[in-house]
Structure formats: structure tokens, C-alpha cells
Image (tube, rainbow, N blue to C red; front, side):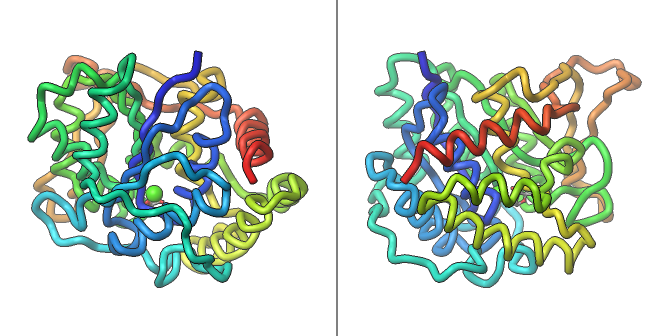
Length: 310
Ligand code: RIB
Ligand code: CA
């Protein structure tokens, strides 16, 4: 029985692979895609999500645009990694997947109400849309099976010394979602930095040989180049599909139940995810945090999902 999932994302090269992983994996049923301002402004992230599904031949999944920016801060984007349009590298096709007229929260609410069972939400950007949904429609919380989020870190950040980008863009939204009591899993940089696009991984994915793989290889060419230029990481870490792996192949991602708090006020540390792995603060555990990855099993899952697409 496949798990119904909604992916809320800010495509972004790695978000595209998360969408493909979710759309192509037999254990998951992708029932909706929603977008948020993050890596690039909302107009681009929404168009890019439609392009990702168009390339993959996925035409039966609605795509809605959500929040253009954070709950209370000013949006800061990441063109230095993803390019001006958010999908630097390939010539982008015109998307044939339409933009659903509903807002992200309207689409999610409709899907939650209609689903035969609680729905998992996989978030691969700032969690502004999820926070707005839970703030404005708290009655729907019990229709959400769990939230799995790529973001945060148990170690250093990637946009400031202590904050990972998705957390840093909207830490208030993250704090609200973590406090909701819905099962929450954080898949941070401490694990996603193991999902490295090595030359062997690129060759493995390119060898799938379909349209999706060819487009994906052009994305990875650009993504690895910018990660090399910015972080000195020529094997770019493909962050977002690791969050999908938590549901698609639970055995491939090790989790611990621990305490997660979000820094909101720190002049230098805002957006930091404080993960009390040693229980030093003696606070109630409130999140599952990824601490390990079966790297080969992960790539095998991504490869198999891409192979099931156009
Ligand atoms: O820090 C990495 C995260 O920020 C990824 O989700 C990437 O797509 C960007 O959104
Ligand atoms: Ca993302």
C-alpha cells in the first residue's frame, strides 16, 4: 500500500530530484505539489516544479503556488547555487503541467480532506506554507501522517556558520511546525552531505537513459559546478531527495528521537537548529533527526525512480 505524499518545495536542482524520487517510487503516491519562495522567487519555483513534472511525464498531479516569502522576514534567495531562474544549466522547456488556481494551502487542505488516510508532507524548502496551513486550519492537523523536512543541521550551517538555508529563510515557520506536535523528521546537512553527486553517481543516473535522466544530468552538471565554486564541493550534495528516502526506503536513513529547538533571536545564530543529541537540556524529545544514510541504497532508489519516469 503506497503512502500518499504532498511535496512542498522551492525548485532548485535538488528539489527536482526529490519530486522525481517521490513521483517514481512505488511505495509513494504523489498527490500534490506546492511551491514556496526560497532558492529563487516564487514565480520561478512554481514554474520549475511544473517543468520538473513536465519533463518526467507526470501530468496528473496538481501544482499550486504558496507563500512568496517568510512569515515575518524578508525573503533571501540562493541564486549563487541554483542560478537566476532556479534551474541553471539546461534550456528549460515550456511546462505543459498547469498551475492550479488554488493556493498551496487550499490545495493541501483539499487533498487532506479527500484522502482515505492521513497524508505525509515532504518539505524541501522553507516551511512557510506548512506553518500557514497549521496556523489557519488547525483542524486539519490530524489528517497529516507526518512531516519530513530537508533542512537544518546537527553541525554547521551553509548560509551562515550556524544556520542551514531552509531553516534560516523562515525560522519562525519552522518553530511553529515543530511545535505543532505532528510527527516531525529533520533531514539535515549532517546527513545530506553524504548524498554526494560523484562522477560515478552522475554516470549511474545518466545511464538510465530516458528524457528525465538526460535533463537531470544537465542539472547536475550545473549544480556540481556551483557547489564547487561556492563551497569547494565539486561532488554537489543532493540534499532534498534524502528527505524522500525517509518515506520511500525507511531502512536507508537512520533516525534518532531527540530534542530540536530553533534559534529565532540570535543576531549571529538565527535559524540555527539546536539538536540536543546528548539530552543535555533534559527537554522532552520533539523530533526525529536523521543521523545516517545508506548511500548506495539511497542512489539505487533515486535511480530506480528516475527509470520509471519518461
Ligand atoms: O540547504 C539546502 C536546502 O536549501 C535545499 O533544500 C536546497 O534546495 C535549498 O532549498
Ligand atoms: Ca530545496
